[in-house]
Image (cartoon, rainbow, N blue to C red; front, side, top):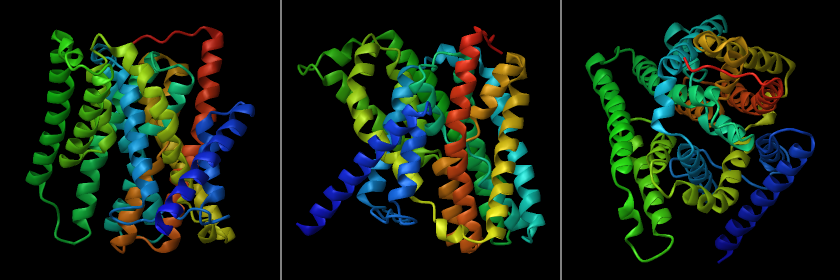
Length: 398
């Protein structure tokens, strides 16, 4: 009973901290997600120590709620994204996704090798620079009501491509740590499975829903359509992990499929209370995982600033060049939209620590870089979008 009361107290602390942090951020004209991440830093182990998320295989109840929160967030983003919209920006999204992986990977490798790592370990370190956190950017775009903009479609499409490439790179660099080389055939099989999963689920599922979605209304309960598509969301989130993709990709595909139904707007309204309850947990827990004590020395802070600068510039450059067909201002929006690493960088850093590739200091730097990019990007992205909206700039699909 004591354990249950501890869990409830932690839930209360996280939820209240998220609301306070989000409110302060919005009063400062910043996206609420910035305040939620900052609140996590404050109540986490580094400062107040009110919550202690654990880096374990099963995680804590807070970690579970955080995972559900980001899954539901990407599901809701998918609800506002139709397959036809993504097709219109397919070429641009592909370029952004590919360049947004190659440029950070190259620059991250050079930094790691220059810091004393051999090339095999440098490639592992560089993998933490690669994957964009779609959840953070999606939240900012959703808060600003910008999900229907061309730049947003490019960012979301590129995030899917980004995840596939990041998964493959991680597979390669992980296999290199054993010194036995990597299995190209296995990687090609994994790639085929990931691409096939997205194509079959995204394209096939959308066509089926477009053809006939009246079956969602056949059960007697008025909430049946929501229950059915939430089951689809959780099922596809799990299925995507089986092919090596992040759970949020499956959730996004589930939302995209549900966007083809006649009940789309009703589903959007019904998911809002769930999002309000659960998504703050993801951002607070993400912020709480930074260990400020490991960053106490001046040398470490300088390394952190350099790593964060490399992480921001490399993603911005890759996204900007890939989206130049939209015009320079829209390309800048896309580039910044790809910058956040968030939970993806934290996961890769955790793998590196457990594999003995990272020291505690390098682990702290990579985690802090991931969270700093997650905190820096939202206000910049919000400012760029508001400025472009005020100027009435229109981006053309590429």
